Image (cartoon, rainbow, N blue to C red):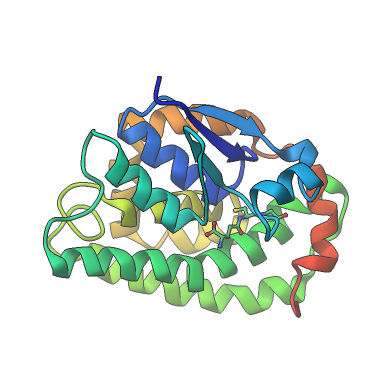
Length: 232
Ligand SMILES: N[C@@H](CCC(=O)N[C@@H](CS)C(=O)NCC(=O)O)C(=O)O
């Protein structure tokens, strides 16, 4: 046993990036569901900014998804999740940074919260938030579609890297929203990439962990109406 604990809540896209990295490298891990502790002293002791994921490896504790994912790749054996050339590795970081700067805010934080997280809690969607997010998502999908039209089957290489594992959970969230389905329908290169990703054993395994929780009320998200809706 690798003595690894991943803390988070099951439908978190960031948590699922880490689950994908661990699973793809066949690292056994325990999952500690923080849903009932979010924002409490136990959670804040693990993550001073009140977010997830957090990884604990034999007492070495780490937060921030990119830091965790790089650590998982470098600390454990299994398929390498980073390309070998400097140019491809830098491209991978460009995707990771673009995910957190552009794709995640517009897709998961804005469209995803309004369409998928608030309705099961009985909170009406703020259509203004959706309206602002949609053109940003269009830009992101155009960029991704162009990149996947190049001569590599995954985002930066002919094998999956952290770039793909960072993008997948957020793109999956997009596919759950009506507007996302409409936008994705005209993106054949992204569709082919999603099919390649969805057939990986690691993705199949992580999806089986996540799907039972999709669409269920995420109780701690009641607070997000004040803390997470723009303007912040
Ligand atoms: N910069 C952080 C962001 C992580 C993040 O925003 N996680 C979301 C879930 S995907 C979260 O913790 N949400 C809980 C909350 O805001 O209450 C990272 O990259 O790990």
